[in-house]
Length: 328
Ligand SMILES: *Cc1c(COP(=O)(O)O)cnc(C)c1O
View 1 (cartoon, rainbow, N blue to C red):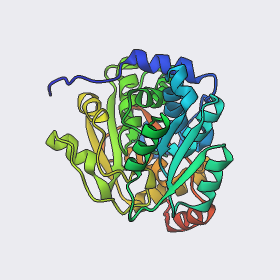
View 2: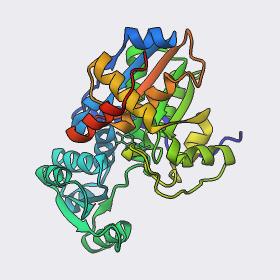
View 3: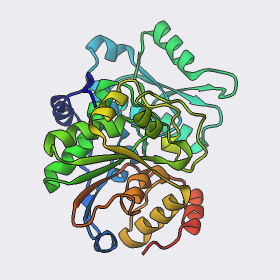
View 4: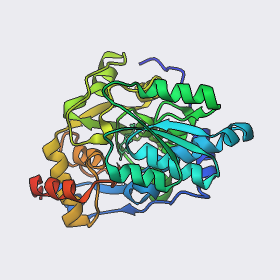
């Protein structure tokens, strides 16, 4: 495969690690005797469910806002998201004393709206059916001089997300495999850059929901493929198309994209709860479910797994656990 020009280097990830350490948690790496017995491998789970705001997105948001000029910081930032990127931007901006506006759909869960406002963000509501959130953000950016920070398609966001894998390698040393979930590919591309830098022979697999395999199709055809919004419980991976900046990085460094069903995600959530005592949201289960499914032969290998987040409301979580079967 030809090497493509890419927007982010391992040095950028190292720089991001230096910048975010003032504010981000260094998340724990957990192991599980039962997971190791099941797979015949040594699994290392990097637990971003313990990151601030409950997901890795704080890393990219904090790094991106930190890189703005003083003038840009004074004017403020804007993001459009109903999920973890919104919370991450709101908290990171507050920590850096930067005004922040978040564009959220009118039907976003009340708890998420309240949490975002609670961090001091100005929330602008739009109608998902009739309005275009990107146009609203662009309009705000033009009128108020705000800087738009997108959730994945941005070099400083990608570098920030890569610090998760960098920390994992720093803590456990060489790994033969790394499994990372993918939506727009910010986490996967950043982690792939860090992994290839720390362990050039590490085999990297992205994982997405079976119902929405746009990144798999893109990687296999060599062109970014767009799909309809996928129907899956993995709400952090419902993106319709991989990013312009993330795709070349994924093509360069990622061996393949695997897919996982919603049933497997429920099974994995139950495993995490029962065996490892951790609450992981559906999207956060993708990488582990793929690694533990047997789809790739990982016997006797050292395997890194990024657990991307743990934000799930209690009622949905209870239902997912009920659906989940014991995989041991
Ligand atoms: C955003 C998110 C993802 C997907 O990340 P990308 O950088 O868009 O690929 C995965 N898991 C969780 C918990 C997320 O919040």
